[in-house]
Image (cartoon, rainbow, N blue to C red; front, side, top):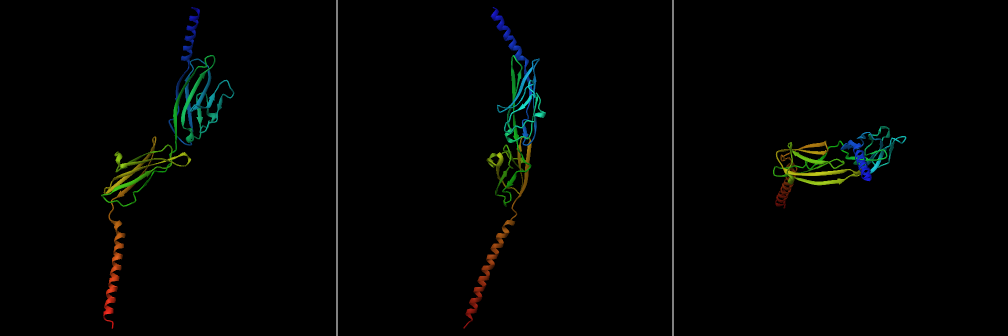
Length: 268
């Protein structure tokens, strides 16, 4: 009976201890640009207990811890892509500077109580790091002449970015949704871990087409617009001139031959 009472008391205490510590919330930006700085926050409620430590991890590798019993309480571990600014860090906040593409990953905050329980709670969130230059996507294939019966054949290629931007075509302000008109060439690697992607478009020619290609990463976008006008026949002029020159030469030859024949006829 006594043992049962002791076990019951222990269970009640464990339940109380479990209830004491809880993480109220974590703040990790979902998308940040390369080179920027960020502040990660971890808000917790100890419910009267004492704090033992706060630890931060990226992809299960620790890069920062706060332990109030130590002097100084902040300590950073070296981790590729993670630069901790200790002067701006506290028990609830971690400041990272000069983000790189390697900074992306799953960030976890782990809070632990002081002895005797050392109970802990944790929560996590993912952060993506992108690079999106100001350069607009490039459109090729629109320079060639097109007649009304032709299919335009153009490509849109993004600038070197990360992750690979999503490309979208629009014709005269209308988004192209017919997948049979589109050809995706996928993402290809570029220097410094960046990616380039290309999307092709084949569509019926009209008198005039306004083409727009939009590249997006998250809420960021870059775009380029070109206009294709139906071939007016001007491209035939060089060919017609070439034919005219040939005919003129043939005429000159025939005239020369006729003249020579006449001279020979009257020569004795």
